[in-house]
Length: 278
Ligand SMILES: [Zn+2]
Image 1 (cartoon, protein in one colour):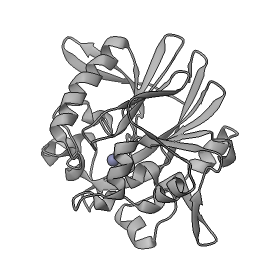
Image 2 (image 1 turned 180 degrees about the vertical axis):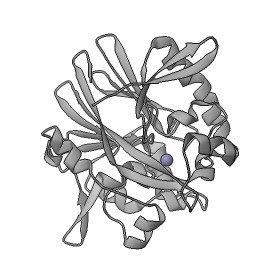
Image 3 (image 1 turned 30 degrees about the horizontal axis):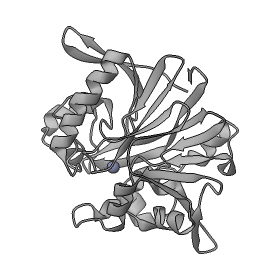
């Protein structure tokens, strides 16, 4: 898809299964299972959607999926399939060494697991020429997670990047290439960032885990994983109407069916119009 000079594609790294109850917080199962059915272990299938962006002569990757540093037991717990990111990049003629910038919206394993890979027992950067961009507060939290979210943070996904001096830590919102803006949006974590892509008068907004699937467009449908659910609610009330008003294309980090949709207001009700982005 093109936005003026900027070009982007949605790449699916793979899928994972997370507990449906945890994904929908306070929403009762009879309501959420109509939108996304659960398996025998109560897991729902989520995609790990990444973006390949070409802007201002830079090749940029947003998110890197879960990666391949997994043992069989944990692959099974999360029903992981993938990683397919390298193959999907090749579909567009992009090799790992071609990536200039990697953006992680936050450092949970399903967003940055492909940052690194193992070579001869050493964990190294999977994109050897890339700078990795994350909010400083997110990185600091990832170095010292709390008892509740420590299971989401795997140091091998980001510490080797810092050690290799390839990490750029942001203190605030920042444009990192023409038409590519990173916007700090707390709620899911304190320092998650969303990605706004614009060009030619058009905008696409990567909602990261603020609105992980289309089902989460409903305001109270907020993940149990969120550290600050009331802040998520505030930010949903800010960014969803903005996307409606401005006609932005919304991109959902975990929607396995429709990763992208235009959002419209139909007589006061929010309507998502899925759109194919390849
Ligand atoms: Zn997350």
